[in-house]
Length: 370
Image (cartoon, rainbow, N blue to C red):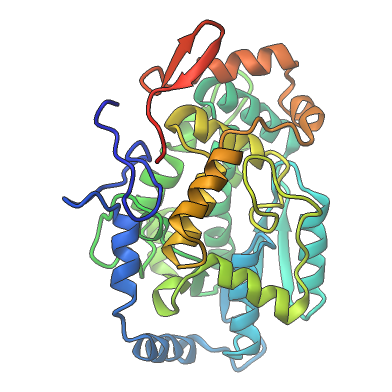
């Protein structure tokens, strides 16, 4: 950790899993942004339109699937597909662990614009058990949810014979990570998803309480099923310049997307990742394990797309990064079947000892974001 780097362009530290830096100290997310500025976007849009025309339904059937949370990014994709590109998308939602009121409101607003939606709520006894288990074991209560949101759209595509899926963005390219294949930012690769997003095979979760049948919602279809059904999965962000803040402004303008009443704990914004009450804990654990939290994540993305200066981003990080997730804490504790003492003890168990030094009774970060 003595060699920890802070991106010279945004604020991302090299403690982010899989991020890389060039010789000038710039992270590969910022380098990818510069590459995007040179892309012929009209040509990409033409390619997108050709894909839509190939799969467009003329018989009233769904012609594509959008994995949809109800948030600004997936909603902007759904809205553009239906009303700009005249597609007939089916929105597929794997339920948040702890659904929020504002998330439900935003889902209802968009559905009432004329969309069909499959909302899948898995066995809550199993989900809560796995959340507690993964919080205790891995410091991440959403491991199985990550598996579920990746599995469900593919399952629906196979069952309903829908051959086209539009995911949002390739996170490893957009935000810094490991690029496995040359076209990873265009075509979704299942092996990469398992390695980088889930990091595990759900079959490994079987124990004295969890059976193979309990894991059905979290397991992707077999690869030969996907190939036999000729399912193609693309990233929308490959065809159109991806900007999370512009996505927010778009849905706000088009159908009055609702924000949180107050800023979200751990950050300065009130419009991103609002649909799950457990998210503040999820991002706080990122801070515990990797030394950067939600404010740094949000600010870096705004800096990369010229919505915020690096100096302003640094102020936001100093003010809010690593803020304890107090909001709805009683509901989170009940969901995880934890009391506050056990909760805090487990958080400290997952502190990266190379990042945190215990000085007296206080943990001090071993590197400074600057």
